[in-house]
Structures are given as C-alpha cells and as structure tokens.
Image 1 (spheres, helix red, strand yellow):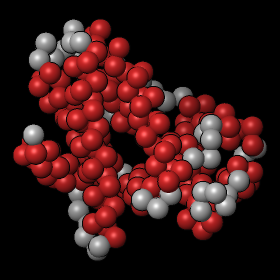
Image 2: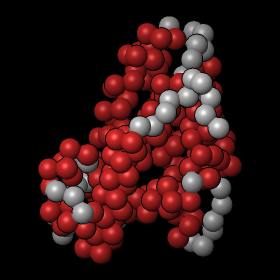
Image 3: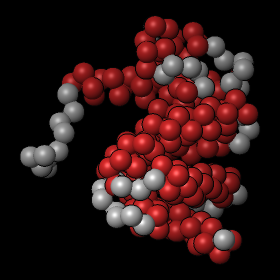
Length: 203
C-alpha cells in the first residue's frame, strides 16, 4: 500500500529501470563468458536489445553497466536526518541506513543474485574493481558537502564516517561472495554486524 508521501514511480521511470536492469544482466552474462576486455559495448547493447546510444545514456561505460543497482545504497544516504554534532552518531546512522538496504537486498531475490554475480566478478576483473572504487569516490564527493551542511558536522567528520561505513559495506559484500563460493550461504545483515564488530576490535 502506498502512503500519501511515498513517491509514485511513473511509467517512464519504471521502463528506464527495467531497461537498465536488462543492460546489467546482458553485461554480466558477457563478462562471465568473455571477460570485461573481451566484451564490447555493441555486444552488450545487442544482447540487451537496445541501441548503443541508449546504452551510453543509461550505463555510461561497459564497466559501469554492472553497477546499476549500486544506486540503491547511494540514494539511501539522502535519508540521513539530524544526528547532532557527534561523528559516532553519524556513523551509527550510516550503519543503520546500510543495514536497512541490506535487508531489502536480501528480500529481493533477483537483485541479490545480480549483486552476488558482480561481487564475484570484481574479485577476478581489475577493470571492475577500478570502476567500483571510482564510483564510490564520486558518490562520496557528491554526498559529503550535502550531508555536512544538513546535519552540521564538518566535511572531514562526514568523510571519515562514510569511509568507515563504506569499508564495512565493501568487506561485507566481498566476504559474502567469498563464503558463497565456499558453499556457505547466509543473510547479509548478520554478516554486516560481524564485520562491524571486527572493525571495532581492530581500532
């Protein structure tokens, strides 16, 4: 049931997202078969049933094509509210945002499968690792000033808290993929809490 304040996804936005997911699926299939360097944009576009122009408009680069769902975590940061002038409170708020998104990811079987395939590919494809790092830095640069202004902390405090929360997220997703390959499956949120505990014990 939609609440009065909830945004309603229009037909155009829904179609755009569906097309983006088709591009992501095509890129994943080809990267797993031929590797990143052995795959062209034209091949991804053809497999997804879109023109190269549409591909570039929605995905940007062939490496970025597999990170379409990453926007869910970046977009969630806009939900960070007032946390006072305490960096620990900000870190706790960021952890809760990421934990909520991990719960939602666990509940979405198709998105979970896409994420797992991407994390497994990153472990073997330096080009994808580079793209993932670049996207994270770009996202951080975009959100740091906005969050700092909104909650009243310094940019350094926000960048530090985002750095710690981002490290925990990356470690969670990479460990998830590693355990999956070892035949160990489990929900993401408890693993996220385990990683947080390890980080706390290391500092």
